[in-house]
Amino acid sequence: MPGVGPATTRLLIQHGVHTVGDLAALPLATIQRLLGARTGRTLSDRAHRHDHRPFRVPDKTHG
Image (cartoon, rainbow, N blue to C red; front, side, top):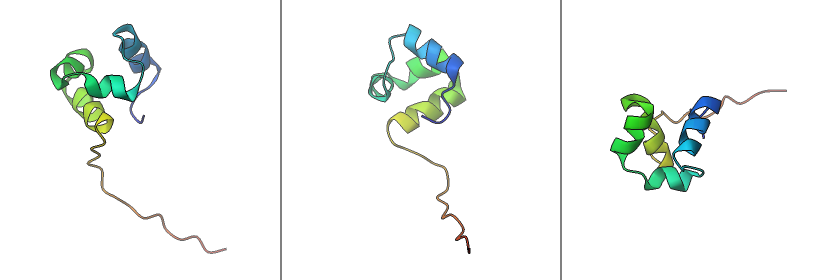
């Protein structure tokens, strides 16, 4: 999942989170306590398939 590097992965595993489903099952407050307010909200949203990034269509390449 974007935003989950090695340190975050280790921290989540230490707290019993091994899959995106495990992460989605946690209350937002718990995730934010572990990862901080902003990162916790972002990863919780992504685990629930809520992605607020703008949709971009890749430029066509001519070749």
